[in-house]
Image 1 (tube, rainbow, N blue to C red):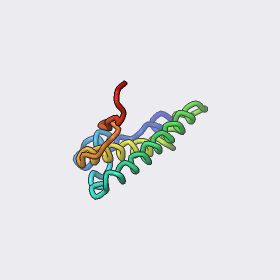
Image 2: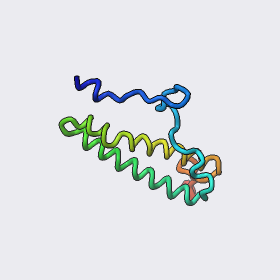
Image 3: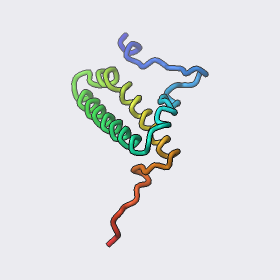
Length: 109
């Protein structure tokens, strides 16, 4: 009896596609942000992801922890991942410096 209750229901988007395959973030959210503002928001979201991951890992160590982790943190974790995808896509579109394209300012010795 507890199996079906604890299972995550299928979530369908407007066109019948599985929402987990879509980017749930607002693609225009950071359109008018400067690169510095985008970088600050990216750091904030990465920090949030790290915090949620630690909480999920900690919850999973306890009795019934997987259920607690999914109920309490998984939705926020997925939303933060989607937010990070939007931030990274906007940074690429604006040609901002990101961790992927930062160049070192020091010479190879």
